[in-house]
Image (tube, rainbow, N blue to C red; front, top):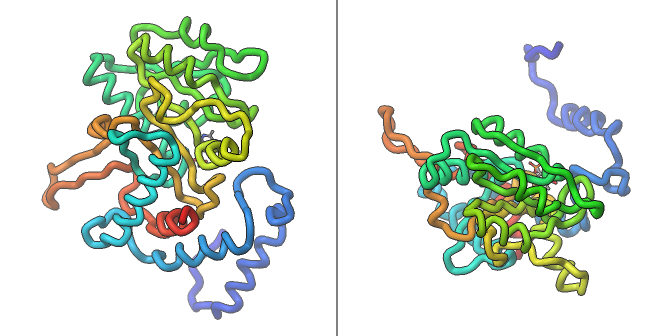
Length: 297
Ligand SMILES: Cc1ncc(COP(=O)(O)O)c(C=O)c1O
């Protein structure tokens, strides 16, 4: 068991030990790892690292103390909204990753359903291919999830989604693309279903958000999947995946920023005044925000 040492060790020796430890890891730079690390070029990584180090110390919780971080964050969100089909009413939040973006979308939909539909314990209906983190969020948030079988092409079967909807359902969840098979659910059809039944549609574009728009520009047949599709209420897109930013960078975007009143946590029943956050995290690293800003620019 490791114990705190009585005397310090020379930094160069510690650094050597850190590097030594990595010897047994997968060789991601050689393409030996298809997940966890998204590496494009050395030059891009250098930009990401240097931007991160510029904001290594700042805290994104302190928007008034660090207007610099607030500016970077706002610009990243605005660029994301522009890329992903948001209109003039759209809004969003920079988060630590896909898990936090999805958690916040589900929390927002839960509180929307409680307030506007009177559903105490809301339910999510989704194809079985949706990311595990939806169930994780539902577990934390006191919600239920129903997962439906796929079509033979591994996409959501909209008829089965519709059949699973009941009076407690608040959200339909679809992926663009899903992690297990890498295919897009039929977002337009699911959007029409969500509109018809008065439900929230979340699109998980954690993998596709910063890849698919560019693949489309290159002429690949990317189906409509973003905030411009009628019925889509929220969308998650990870900048730390194919946006190639440092880890700890994702966006949760909303078609209408009014929804974010259900996202926000506000508290003042303590001696330190009002505490308001839009994220799950309190103190937040500013490095990933600077990295995302630099890489996007
Ligand atoms: C489609 C999809 N959604 C959500 C996540 C969760 O993202 P994170 O690991 O950044 O929390 C992933 C991760 O691979 C994913 O592929």
